[in-house]
Amino acid sequence: MLGALAVLVLAYAVPVRDPVVSALTGQVLSGVSLELPLGYLALAPVLGLLDYLTMLTVPQHVTVLVTVLLAFGAWRLVRTRAPHGVPARIATEAGALAGSLIALIGFYGGGVLAPRPMAELVVEDPDLVVVDFHSHTNASHDGRWDFDAERNRSWHRGAGFHVAYVTDHDSIGPAHRAFQRNPARAGDDTVLLPGREVVYAGQHVIALGDVDPRLGDGGWMPDPDAPAGPHAVEDQERPARWCAGWPVLIQTIPNDLGRVPVPACTPRGAGVEAIQLIDGDPRGLAQSDLEFERILSIADSLDIVLVSASNLHGWGSTAASWNLMRIAGWRDMTPGEVGATIERMVRHGGRDAVEVVTYRRPSIGTAGGVATLGASVSLPVHFIGSRSRAERISWLIWVGLGLAVATLLERRKRSRLLG
Image (cartoon, one colour):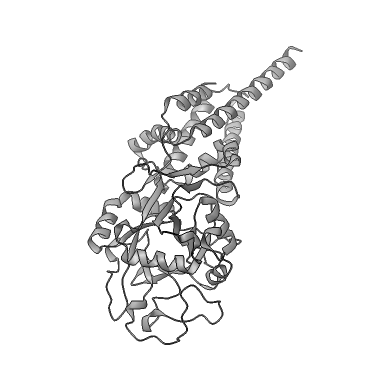
């Protein structure tokens, strides 16, 4: 009952805040919103929690687990103590703890593995294209076993992306084949474009397009086994130091920010044209939190663009961030034309070429001590604050149903005891 009252108070007392904001300013963007399908709203208590957990760093996950264990311990202390006797009591508590841990692991595992409705970013301006610069398929060694390019497309469609780069570690073939299945008109469905994630100059970088920066002679090498991508050329020769055709490189996080390849044309190739401000990996989110100002400083000093990335590997159903780019008439372009325009804008469009949109994430919660205790209170309040009115209504309906079921079971129990 007390828990239900707490949910009711929070649902009405905590102001509603837009869940997505500009990553740079933290301000709400006009004409940009998060749309929740009916299936999502029906299961909001579960899906909202899973989305929120996806936005947390590893230390924040530790905070959540510590909070859950403390709440579990408090509940077991105040509940009716039965059966009697120390051995029976120990056995009962051990069983309750084991069952609770299994349920918690199952909840996390379900969030990672189970398909589910997704929160979709919606933009009102038809000239804004929503882009993801970094995603994978099962062709990557760390990709989910059944996550092929079309499932990648479906995931991005569900999250509201118009364009996504497939940047596998080990093969560009799946990205090329996905490119061949793109719609003729870019605005008719989510477009997949080729790229790759490579270790270049000692750093993990994203290379957009067909060019592999690790190779000589400008890094260009045709793939005879894959269909042509959007930047294919007929000639089969490239001169050495050919930086004019060098791919757009994006510095990823988590990474050593002291070794970012400087954007300049050298005999060994060019440097990065952009740097990730946000990465969907929990470690990337942590580095973004800890080194946010440093990333901004690097982007300013090198005059490169700030972007974000899902770093999707097929695990989970939550996008941490989105990139907005203004391309007039992009919906009537071919996928190849859109890809070429995106890459040209990243390279030459300046800092305003990309607007990074992100979930309104908590900035508190490190493991251990007073910070963890403070986060145990702040995280639930932050979570409720980022829920829409519709989600809060769904929560209240589920709480009401739970109370009704609990009351009914209690009455039946009393009836059996009296009868």
